[in-house]
Structure formats: C-alpha cells, structure tokens
Length: 112
Length: 112
Image 1: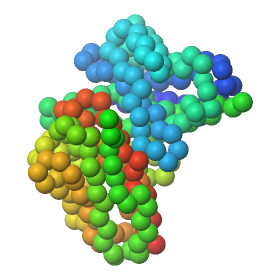
Image 2: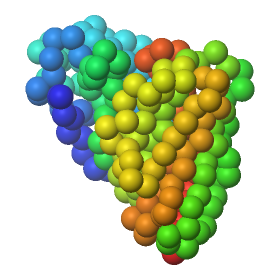
Image 3: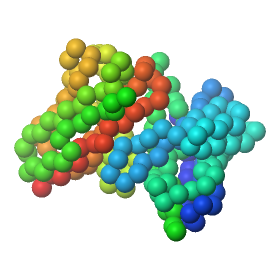
Image 4: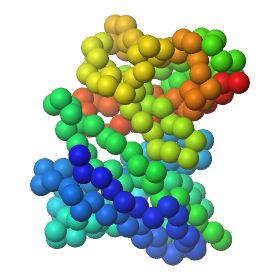
C-alpha cells in the first residue's frame, strides 16, 4: 500500500492561498490521491480527489505532479474556518473494496 | 440531505465496563464504516459493512469489540470489557458502495 508524507503543521494568513504538500512516492498507477479535512470535534470531510490530471471544485484545487509522486492541495483564499487537520490519502484496494488509510495529516492554522 | 447520525456524543465509563455506540447512516448508503481515532492520530478503520454483511474487520479487536448492522441500515458497535486504551473518538461513516465517505460527528469515549 502506498504511504503518504505530510508536514505536521502549517500556518497561513487569512485571505492568502494555503498550499498543502503531500509526498506519495510509491503510488501505483491505478491509485487515486484523496484529500479529507477534519475540523476540531467533527468527523472528516471529503475535499477532492484525483488520479493524474489537476482537479478543481468549489472547495479546493488539487495539483498532481507528472510523475504522480507528489501533490499539492490549494485553498485559494483561506478563511479562519479552514483551520483543520488535512489528510492526504492514497486509495488502496482491499478484497475488492476501496480502503482509505488515514495518516496523521497536516494541521493548518489560518490566522487573521 | 440528513447526515450520518451518531449517539451518544460523549460517554465516560470505568475500565471493564461495557459500552455501545449507535450509528444511523445516510439513507440509501449501502456501505457503513466504523473508525477509531485516538488523540493525535488519524482515524483507523475498525470494520466495514456492505449492506448487512462484513467486508473488512481485520483491524477489529474481536476479543472485546463487536459490531452489527441489522437490516442493512443502523449499526451498533460494542466494547466489552473496555480498557483504558479504548479511550478515543469512534466515528461512523457511510458511502454509496465504496465512494466518498460521509462521516458522523463521532462519539468521544473516555475510559477511567
């Protein structure tokens, strides 16, 4: 199973872009990169996922390098409510079902 | 759309006592998951149901933990007897097959 490496914490000023990196150097060709976040005292929330191409939705953008060994989640205009732990996850296959394995994530602190 | 419901939100028990958690998934979601999240760590999958059948329980400590999903809807997770190291947040999630997970708010268990 591919593993991910994320910085334990990051800071960002409100209104600025938050760029959260993730390394997944052992990712396989058919494995997707998923991002979830967990705001304090809540369950994790799905943000975005991608395979090869860059992806964008109303919450964030996902940039995946051409060799797929790393990716960056971009929150274009961070707000105080974006303070959370962000998990980069590589989806693995387990007995035919897709298993998500959470690491320890990056704790993002958005300050005024 | 109503989210994943869990109860209770908080529970304090003494070691060797038993405890049960309840989860009501999003209507129509066939797959249900129970995760354990110890403070400072990412969620760890305990058990995954597809309808009322178990797909993956490889991480479930079966000597003390049990889970069921009668009629393929609601689910309960039980711990008997509890140990100090079971103190954690227990998260329930559901999905349509193995797609995007929707998490509930969790139950915070403290074992004294």
